[in-house]
Image (cartoon, rainbow, N blue to C red):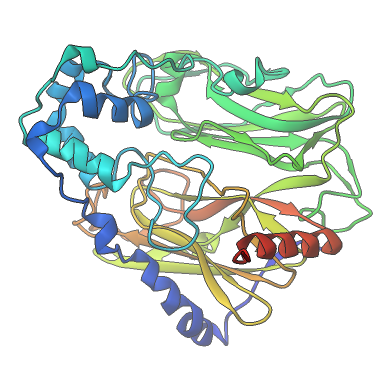
Length: 460
């Protein structure tokens, strides 16, 4: 039996879309408070060394440094001055740093929030409008220290990976169609281990230029199946499902302290590596998977499953030329669960996506909405522990996506084309990557009670 099943909405589609879909449409609205940064006070007094440099260090330089994914470094005053107007344009529209969640709707606390505050945006805008004054060099903060952008980003927290698995090398021609490479690599694991964090990265600078995304599936003998994946509890499953998904904008995956993924002896990784040509041959392109284990003997009480919630209904996706199109899909939770994150995935015409919970008692709640989706930044919005949605058995998850196939979309390669589902970036798709942690009913009820106690006003 599947843990979630898509709800068939043939005869009642109008009823669902009227009751739920129209409510979900509100998530594409951008609140005035979000879209307009607060005006900068005394803009002429803002300087780079005292005011702007600390913001760049905190939110920008991790990507905008040599050998990292940013198109230019933003380390020095000269760096920032030369791109000042581009910086102002991107931050004022909240396109950079890449954090495109609607801040006015749904859950607002995330473990990995990289967005700028209204005050930080006002500081940058005010600095540019004032003519980019440098300020006193003595005010310049010490240089920030970041992990090697070509190395393991989670090493600072966990040390070197306990296990590294590399894909088979692939040489990509200078001019060719997109490639989907699907090799299999043995893990050589000889004992059962629980995983607390995972990271994927291309191995070289050139490989990073051609790899669009990576799917790593864990294949191993699963007696009894995996919660949420097995069709029969007594089957021996050949796969434990998707281990991790990676695309530009996603660093790694750290599981909550009470959850993880199980790897068994003899397991192997089945890759799907999407590559695109860059006009230059790239030899022996590889990606590698870094795995960080819990200490031996540690068994977390819960097993997390990475689910792909399809929104576009696969080949049913149908986007007319010159129009904005909506797709919607529904999933029923067959067991109580905690939702760990929300990561929309679409292509060049992707506009926005939301996820809404319809609880068994009839309550409706928009959990999250991305209202400025950027196809070349695949951000994983990881909920803070205190607000990660606790979803009772029977909850309906409603996913809604919008595609913009008009000339107003600057990413649209051709608004005259009728677009359907496809793997290429010029085609379209819509789904959400979500880590789901299934929890038995007794513990789930306890977690809900604890959450309510924490939220209750304290008596004095």
